[in-house]
Length: 537
Image (cartoon, rainbow, N blue to C red; front, side, top):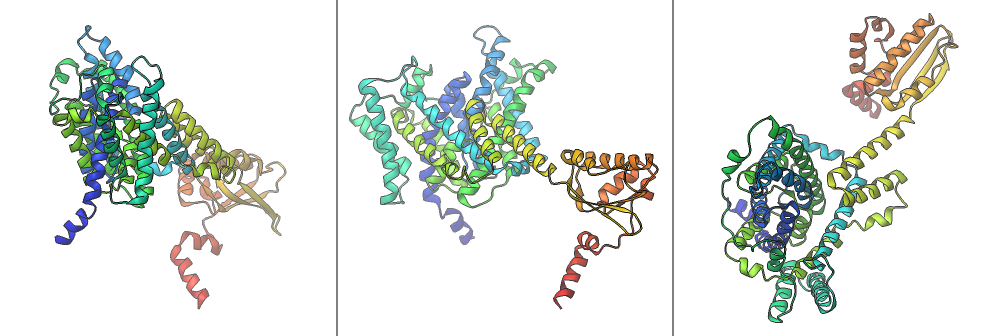
């Protein structure tokens, strides 16, 4: 028992300090995303607290931070606006439709976890991953530039701009230099504390967390514990019209949330050289969103920026995420006045360092070493992440990669032709036979000019889909229409079963009695092992 506790608390100090740093960075992010979605700042803060706490305890990736995110907030804008239009002015029905949508979003995500759909993240190619992190780094960078503007959207000028830049550079300098002196202190937290002290005691006129909230129309961080939103059930009618309205939004939000979470999970896996549980993360994210919707939060998913801050700060266990969530709640309840004094410049500096750490700089070095198609995918995913959102970028990247893969494999179908002494023409097929290679496959045969006896050998080919089976079916019919005899050898078992079901005549066409030792070895691993051992003897 002592050994179990010791292993679980070995990294406790780093987890706690990193969690506090993450909590500080979560405040302006959650507030900003709430403003983007058109809801009260506390709705974003409550979401960051509840989702962060639940996923930290039950999620599939220790050390990963979840909360309100910009990718989801952008979709929520029109949802809230359309929801408000259903009620009278000032009734604020859009907020309750948002809560209902978040609940449905969570149910969909949990359903994805039950069906074990998280494993499909393995289908995301590496160029898509690199494009994702590069695009996300650019998005995070562009989001920070808004902090250099006033409430009217004009850029800071004069002393205000220079002071802001100086504090940002100082924050980045501390984060860059401190690890070279000692690795025992979390550089991000130290940088925030030092820059905040300089700004407060130097009485600098700079934007702070408090002024940021008030400029956005909020009244400050002060709030109580999240309350169960009983009004959802009275203000949002449970009928088909509501499902038709919130259903598409819930589906889109669920997809974006899962893709961003599972991509972030993969990235953290690579950074920590460990492996997370994708299906468990789907379940935790879904459950967290259901609870968040019921208690007045805007929903969320994994946050790559905060997750990287946590990992780079030494946070590795579930404790870091738990501390971040509880510290955020403590800020709301007890330390709102202090947090509101933190300069925005300090948090911007931290995020700029995250951008530098997130961007895959190695992608520039390998551009001339990887296939052109992979370069196109990498650049396309980066651009689409910036222009649209993560879900669109990843789906487009996977589709492009899949089409390229299909095209390349379609070109690999080959047919070696030879004649037997008895006049039978042999076609030996090489390569995968699937929908993309059907045309090339059909072009290999000369039905009219072939002799009366034809044999097609599939020992070096694999029948991959229904299109391939249909092509074989049509080929047999063409030869029989010419009055010629065709035999098929070495078809896979599943292909033979489907052909037998489609027509009884295939029992006469397919050769079952195989005398080729290669086929038996491929079909029977035990025979292969035995043969190998005999060879060694």
